[in-house]
Image 1 (cartoon, protein in one colour):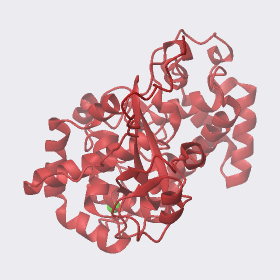
Image 2 (tube, protein in one colour):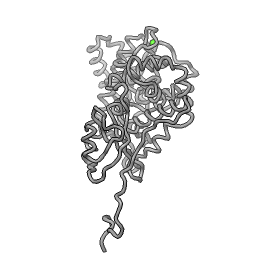
Image 3 (cartoon, protein in one colour):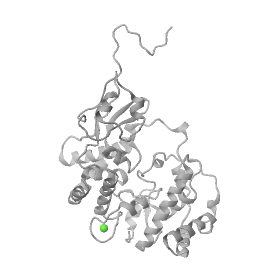
Image 4 (cartoon, protein in one colour):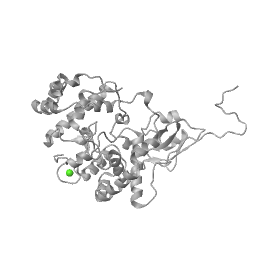
Length: 387
Ligand SMILES: [Ca+2]
């Protein structure tokens, strides 16, 4: 973090961002400008920002003058609230797993993944030995997040976090909660920069303030980032090893079970099928394999699975949804970004890269649709209106 980003790198970084670990980033269509409000006043002069500065200075024994100086350097970025505002329902098209997948899994990203894996094979194996997280999972995350460092975001993290901490879009359904979250992230960020002696204006990231190869938010950086190349500091921007170790440590801390599959292919028993019950806990693993089978979904190859399982539903636009059975490890991937689509994309990219390295068939997630009941000849279509 102490090293300056090279001008070449900054040029190469793309505005906007890769996936970020919250649902906010799922909707990024441009919106009409926010109503202009207090953000015309610089943060260095705003009463709410000054009160916040006093609070965190006291909480962390920082010099108030230093905290105020950092806020005075923060700039409102008008595009950031727009990117954080969910698209109106009327313009939101139905979610489509195929579209989502094609954004993250393509030959260019797979080739970049093969190179990243080959360049870091020893480190990836060391991370697996230490944290129990296999290389394909780390490779999947870093590929989906930043295309292996090609797209780490080029906005000043200080500006993004100040904008979201003090000018969070009020049209957002969880505006108050999210604004508090970003005030916490800004707090983590300032404390980290102070400890590292890094100018707060230096780090660049996504519009949400996520940083480095694995797009860690400041709170994640301070809790789970590790120095995995042993040079005495944590640098998730330039050290692939630090990024690899940190992603693996994050997974371990969020419940990754070494050696456990991520998913099982479901088979449906229509007579017993109770989708409302199975889908009620969403993607939180809840049912034992036998409970799931009693509710009409048989996890193929997973009837001996010891832990809880979840039925995961993926929308396919106007077509019927498809399903997979997720394990605790599937759920752990969603702790990185709260989306089952994200988890599948990470899994599948990692598997595609693994297969491309070895010339094998990728073990991507098998999805199933609920079969249509077969009708006996002459039997009435149950949904056809009577005449
Ligand atoms: Ca390091």
